[in-house]
Amino acid sequence: MQLSAEQLAEFDDQGYLFLPSLFSAEEIAVLNTAAADIYESDRQEVWRETSGVARTAFAAHTYNDAHACLGAHPRLINPVEQLLDGKLYMHQYKINAKAPFDGDVWQWHQDFGTWHRDDGMPEPRAMNIAVFLDDVTAANGPLLFIPKSHRLGVIDAGHDLETTSYPLWTLDREMVSKLADEGGCVAPTGPAGSMLMFSSLLVHASPANISPLPRTIVYLSLCHVDNHITLHNRPEWIAHRDFTPIEAMADDCLQAMAQARQADQATVAAE
Ligand code: SIN
Ligand code: MN
Image 1 (cartoon, rainbow, N blue to C red):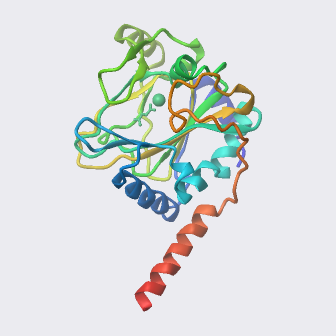
Image 2 (cartoon, rainbow, N blue to C red):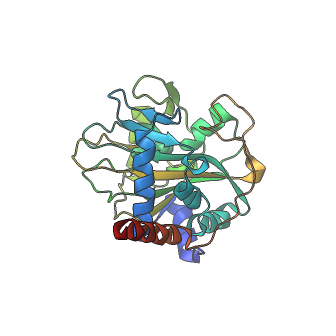
Image 3 (cartoon, rainbow, N blue to C red):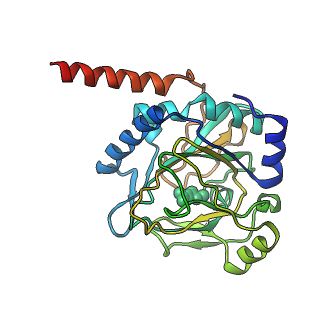
């Protein structure tokens, strides 16, 4: 899959691009089942809210076969190679739960701000892809973006160690208000299987999920191989140190997994 000239221009102008319904319901079901199993485990990579519900599962592409497929999926890797002009490695992979009732906020931040300050990533030649594992609506804690804020480079931020269980370099309210006066504030929403690509400099956040509906989103943070991190302050499973270029898998890798599982279930049912 390659992005069109219009899509590239839109990404450049707004700092993000939304591609609805990129993955089928069967493909998403495979990823969602895997996410539920991972959240139930007591792995160190599963970070929890202060209430105890899962907040995020890091590095699932390294220990789960369905998420290994998504981490090397051509529908994600090819457009980012196009945007960043070269081969990529996985800087971070997370499955963010935003659980019903208890899913907590993500404060206003730029991802590159944290990657640069904490991990020594030299340049913003890295970006995010979000894949919706649930329908994301106005009700269940969608991502909020300040369009065009990616044009300003790294913005002053403070290290917030208190608001949530996850430390983050966050922007103050005055700055966020000023940016929103210029770019507005949007919440891209859509069905499970949609994909949202956004610049590592785009200012974003998300509100708490007090709805009874889940809002699971997978994030791939992909970095150009020539721009790998230089500091190892955070655990390897939060900021990866394997800079091997990702080779995209076959486009039907998740579909094949879904079919194999259906065949297994049919065999068990027939026994
Ligand atoms: C993030 O900004 O990295 C995550 C935000 C969210 O999942 O709502
Ligand atoms: Mn972020």
